[in-house]
Length: 300
Picture 1 (cartoon, one colour):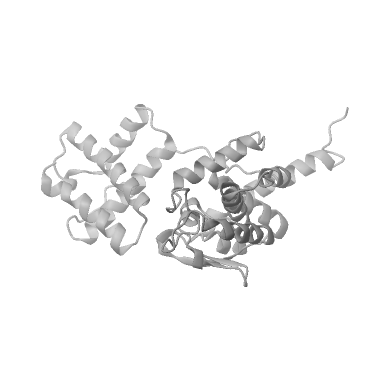
Picture 2: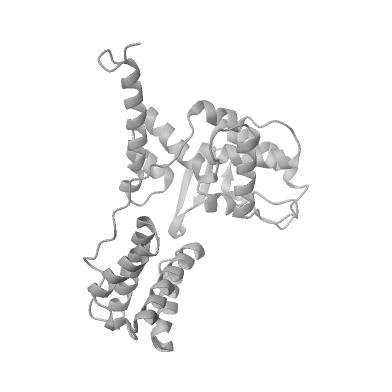
C-alpha cells in the first residue's frame, strides 16, 4: 500500500490514544495487529483498504491460522481490524466494513488460574525485613487485597492511598477512576513501606512504589519480584501479578456470590468479563459435591 493508505493507521492510533484514551500498551497492540494485516495485503497485492472484502478477510484468517497463530490471537487480530474499519467508515474514507459478519476460529475456553486461600496465605507470608522486603510485601498484599491490575499498581502515587478510609484510588483502563477497599494486612504493609520508602525516593518523586534507584517501579520489575517470591515461598505453580487479581475475584465470589459487586471492584466495563469467575466458583462447588454427596462419592 502507498503512504497515503498507511497513514490511516497512524490516524486511527491517534484516535485510540487521544479520543478513546486507551493505554499506550493497547495502542501498541492495535498497531502491531494492523501492520500484520498490512503485510498480508502487500503479499497478495492489495493496494487500498477499500479493495478488501469479506473473502479477503476470511483468506487472511485462514492464512495466519495455517502459519500457526492460535485461535485466540486470530480473534484479537480480527477484532482490531473490525474496529479499524469502523473508524474508516466513520471518517467517510470507506462506506462498508468487510470484517462485519466474519468470525474467527473458536478458541477453547481458558479459565484464569488462581490460588486457594491456603496457598495465597503462604505466598503472602514472606520473611525478612529491610526496604526491599517491605516494598515487596506491600506490593503482594495490595495486589491480593484490592485486585489491582499490574498497570494500575505501578501507576499509583502516594496520595492515592487513603489510610484513614482504608481505600485506594485506582486509574484503570480508559483512564476510568474507581475507589477500592484496602484490607488491614495491606494497610499494615503499606504503612511499614512508607517509613522506608524515603531511603530510595527523592522528595519530588510521587510514585508509591519505587526501585532502589528512586524511580517509579516498572511493570517488568514487579513481575520479576512477584515471580521471585512465588519460587521462594514454594508455590507449586507459576506466580504472576494477574494471579492475585484472579484469586481476589474468585475468593470474593465464593464467599459473597455478588457478581455485580465483584464487577465494580475489578473495574470491568462489562459483566460478561466478570462472569468467567462463576466458572471457577462452579468448579469449586462441583469438587465439594464429588467429595461429599452420598451418590457421588467413590467407593473405596
